[in-house]
Figure 1 (tube, one colour):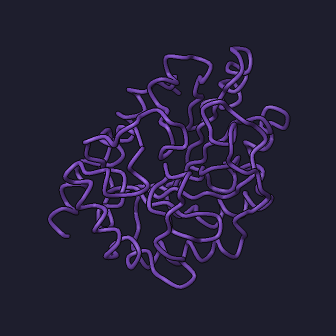
Figure 2: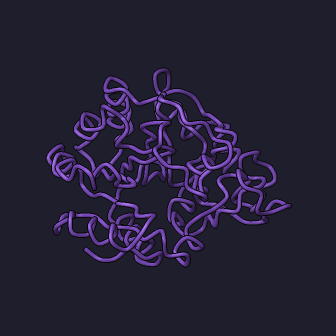
Length: 272
């Protein structure tokens, strides 16, 4: 296990993407398992306005996600993270087990795992491929979490290192006012990364906390129908020209958008 750095993370993902057979450019799909969190971090919209609600992805809906991934012939990465703390979903073990025929990662603040280390054992027993443990408080907890991994696939992110924070955070689609005008900048996110909310709504972007723009629901539509929809491709064309001002979720977003996904960007541009 190596220590997490911004550069090591980008290199790790790029290495994974080089080995992945994408599905219409998609190499990563993020799942939001819950709208509940036990923290209000200063970089998160929860610290100012985002509601904390006990809405959770169910076991049955996780099975629908698996069905849709199978239909899509998806062979990429599944990341369980989203807008809440995954370990607060009472069905989290079942969700991991349902999706474990693919590479499944989980991102957690690790608070519950510090109190109950056997949680980590159970996650791996259910088929988890890799875990990212965030540490926001101090070096002592950081070292404890590293020790808990005990050689298993995963990293601990040192968020109390201010340099790391400045490198990886963005304003969550304008949830924080960090820019006054739209950036003239391309963005690869909607070319390589899908996002499924707890209620099976497929969202336009993982960074969109403010508008939560939906493409449709997986109860009624396939992933391909939503991922390759007219609406999604219209937004992609605007972002391929750097016109963030044309997309409501992107107008005040300051995310870099170019760190990952260039291969998918080039592929999808030829398709749309």
